[in-house]
Amino acid sequence: MTGPMFRMMDQSMYRRAVALAGAVLLAAPLSSGAQTRSEEEARPIRLREAIEQAQRNAPAVVAARGQERTAAAAGRSAVAAYIPTLTMNAGSARSQGVQFFQGTLVPLRGDPWNYNNGLAATLQLFDGNQRWYELSRTRATADAADAATIQARFDAALQTKQQFYAALAARESEAAARAQLEQAEQQLKASSARFAAGVATKSDSLRSAIQLGNAQLAVLTSQNDLRVANAALTRVIGSQLLVTPALEDSTDTLAELPTEPELEALIGRSPAVMQSEASLMAARASRKSQRSAYLPSLTMSYNYSYTQTSSKFSSSDLWLFSGGNPNRQQLNFNFSYPLFNGLIREQQTVQSDVAMRNAEAQLRDARLGARQNLTQQLRALNNAQARVQVQMAAIAAAEEDLRVQQQRYALGASTLLDLLTSQTQLNQARQALIQARFDGRIARAQLSALIGREL
Image (cartoon, rainbow, N blue to C red):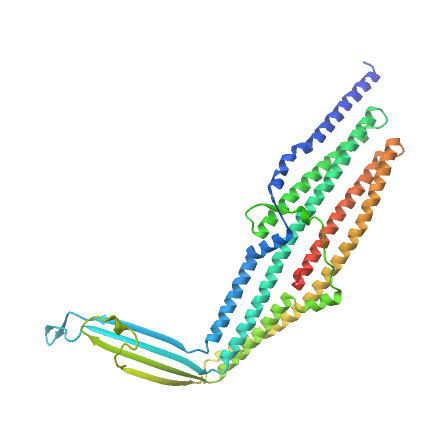
């Protein structure tokens, strides 16, 4: 065969290979349709419902509520310290058999049943105001527990929003990838047709096939990201069923943010700052309570006891004031003042003072950290909002540029490289817009968690 015939056969085989590759690539998205069934089976959930469910089920919130209950119980116990302690006892015993007396065994004599009951009451009259300081400490601890619960609830809301917005970003990325795939499919068909007509080179169809494969990979990646985000969202809210963000929350309807001075004022009452303030108050009360150990204590106690023997069992004799005469009543006053206890009071005083200094440093750091985070998140939000506007304008320009390049390529006035460059710029602008929206949503959510108020 001559050289021209070989070239004709080579071109014919190449056209069939390109057509086959294009058919395979065009059919590939059909096989990924089965992989999206899990997304269709997921239950759509609104953001508000997801946050409420997370605030009920999150382990950190459950633990914070437990600490709140514990602190409330400690407060009730501190109040009850002003009430006398009461103890009641009652018992009965029966004696029978023989006893060894003067070398012989003789039967036991007397009534076999013995009954006893009693009542004891104790009241501390003076303890150097230790109970008062302990009451102040428990109240401050309860306030700290309340602030910790609020902080845990907003942390759970922040985690929910992060996963919720990640799922929305993955869904937007999938939509952008499908638009990219549609462009790549059209481009491959056009390149193949131009090559068959002899007005385009082999490189055009090969590059179009590569672009189509990249677009398919982008769709598969975004679908996988959406599955992962849905699974993470399901875990955060503690749901037994797979959930996915509802379509109603795909668009942002946000209220206007407070001004920066207003946000700075709200920072002073943020959950983290309030928790640190309550911890400092508790540390100060503990320090005062420890110093009361240098003062004497005065305690009053009353004891009542009753015993009786009987020839038979009588349940009424087990209880107080059963009709008999008491054998003993006693009222005591006890004064105590420790003169030296091995410097234990001094050691505990130093420990309480160190704990108070640490609480002061933590409060100072919490206030400064809140201001730093406010500045950081507010600037991140403003930056993200500006990026959204820039990227929306960039997408409009990139779409127009792509339209012009497509017309020029169809007329043979530009190369495929120019067309692919325009497509790449459009795809990058779409992804940048998705990232800017995600960053803005996260920054707003972090601001809400920081000040303890929904924005």
